[in-house]
Length: 360
Image (cartoon, rainbow, N blue to C red):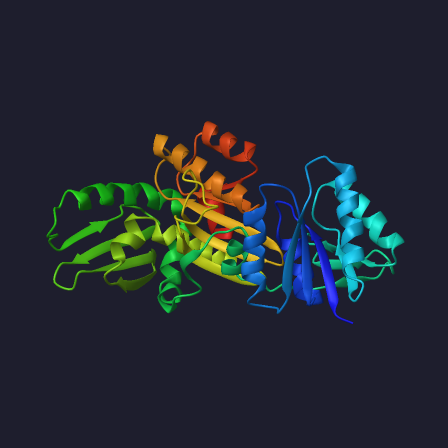
């Protein structure tokens, strides 16, 4: 017999998506409330690339228990030729309990998708099975109605300069003030920058920036007094050293050491996506998926200012939109208000010397 999966829609689409991906039904009935049309469209758009199924929607009114019971019973009557599975992962608690009772009494299979532990529970047989979601960043974003325009999985150049990146991270408290000083001088050099050298004055480490105007490249000399290395960066050297590229790459390299399903650097979101609030940040420094959990890592490579608080509010909007776990990395010592603001919104804050040894 063909298979029908019944799903109750809520604000977290991943459980319904995973349930359909694992069961591969021939038909899907969504039970939704008013205002959830876009959530269903997002689910169907992503699912249609993975399974072949017919989709139908039944609407219930918020808080109307009798209406909800009637809709559930009618679905069972309308699909006598199908094996029916209820995915009880969505909806609110009352809806899930009511639906469970109706479908179990009708002898139907009822499942619960536990996205926190990547397992699916058959509530009828009490069987528990683990699953590997293998979601991509693009798929996860699409489930929330947001299109990813671009994002880097890995660039060989990041690996080539990783020694320099780790040097900057391991000596961050000495380096960032020097970078601030050099950035200010660089910006005062005008459009056509002349060749120039900047040298950190320190007893224990060496760090020199040499700008070659003819090659439009920067050569970095760095290391301990008795072990100095060199690294040359071409056209994107300014972005790397002055616009926080080194900090983003440091966090990217650290996160890359963890177990993950997908990870992207410099993720650009489509601002025209209907789900993306104008207040949300459209550029995510690093996005990662591990199991069904979405992580957002955002970097602040400048001293904390009023603009930093505005940027923090924007990334909080994005983190909340995606139901993600958020991490903030701050190269300079953040003030107490910034830290409290971030933590009050559920974000983790890692600053200064702790960044280079960060693990997740």
